Amino acid sequence: MFRHRSPSIRSSLQARLVALWIALLASAAATAYLLFGLYTQSTAVQISQAEIAVGRACREIIDRYTVLVRKGDEPAGEALTGVVLGALAHWPGIEGGVWSGAEGSLAYAFPSYEGSGPKTDLPLAERDTIAAVNAESRSLGRSVVIHRISRTQALLVQACPLPGRAPGLTGWTMTRAHVNDGPAYTRFLAALGFLAVAVIGAAGFLGHFLYGYSRRIARLEAALAAPEREGADLAHLDRTGERELDRLVDALNAAGGRLREAREQAVAAERFAALGRLSADIAHEIRNPIAAMRLKAENALATGEPERAATALRTILGQIGRVETLVRDLLHLTQPRTLHREPTDLRRLLTESAQWHEDAARAREVRLRVEADALPAAEHPHLDRAQVQRALDNLLLNALRHAPPGSAVTLDARRVLREGAARLELRVADEGPGVDPAIRPRLFEPFVTGRSDGTGLGLAIVSKIAQAHRGQARLLDTGPATTFLLDLPWQPS
Image 1 (cartoon, helix red, strand yellow):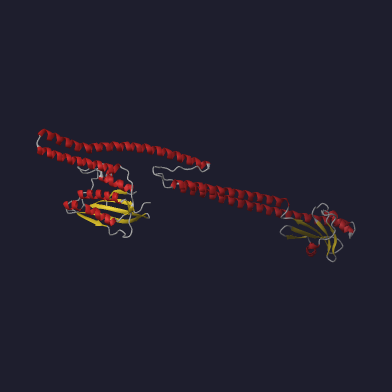
Image 2 (tube, rainbow, N blue to C red):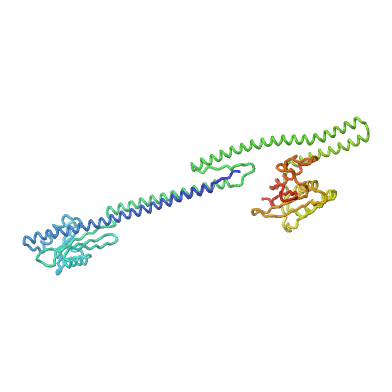
């Protein structure tokens, strides 16, 4: 019988594919983490570069203001605005001005402003921040930078003290670094988008592959595990559509074909061998009584005595009866058996079987016992009553022939559960010498017997009846008694 191992193969394959899936997701998570780290570093670099730029721009304001002061001028009004414009002209995106602790903004410029015209008004939204950073710079007497970071941008404002005769003047510069905008952010989003599409696509493809592969393997498993048809050695598998699996399916189907051919050849060879054995056994069984009849007839003809002729005729009739019994048993053994199942009262069946053999048992001084108390009263098994009766008759006749005088032959019936199914066990036990070990392996084959006057067909017929009921007959090794068992299903499946 072919035993497949597809569940373990499938589990191993699924485990490996799931592990690959998890590794893919873990790799995607690690890549996303690295991308985020790179983007964070990129944002920090942008802020750092912006801080350097506002610092240099602020230093440019100091340098231009210092030049004017050294010339003896104290710039004011438009001169201060000119200083700021000149200082910031080469710093795109940076605005700034000059701040007085007493008067506030003295000058403001944003030369790289991209609006419709030059921007000359101090941004009101940042006025407090500008005032605060200038105040801190005057208080500390050095440059001070303030960061104001929001979700989309970082505001950087730097103030630096201005030298000169006018007290409390500071120059200041300001710019914005867009942390979620610009080339770095665009590259970050593009990388994350590509990663998401790749991971989702790969995960979807792998999930679809796992699902489809599992379904195909499950169908193969179901086909292999399906109840086999009579005469079939291996189920024919349908192709799955997967090239690798179909190669395995084709190999299994080819192996099944070869197995069927080998089985047919083996069955044919066995049939020829069985036919040869059967022919030889039949010839032997029929030749003996024919030889005896011929000898008696020749003796009767040679002597011409009426008494010897009558004795010869009686012997010939006995041998004819023996041949008739042999032919009848052969017909019972070889003819196909059509079962007529019906609920059968086992207690009544066993009692009748014992009653039919009471005379033979009494003649051999053997007791017949029926044990059926363990049977359920309201439930009857579904059997072909006549055929089971014949099997019990053969077993009882066999037991009575071997039981010694003064012993007992027991006919026992019980209902048992085996692997969740109800079974009927019929046992016939005797206290005879037992079965010759030399014939035990072939005990239920035709013409196998331990008696010189036996045909060896009784137990073969019992086995044939058991097989017709999808059961079996066997000899039990249960102790000193010789016990034959008929193991039959309680109800047909």
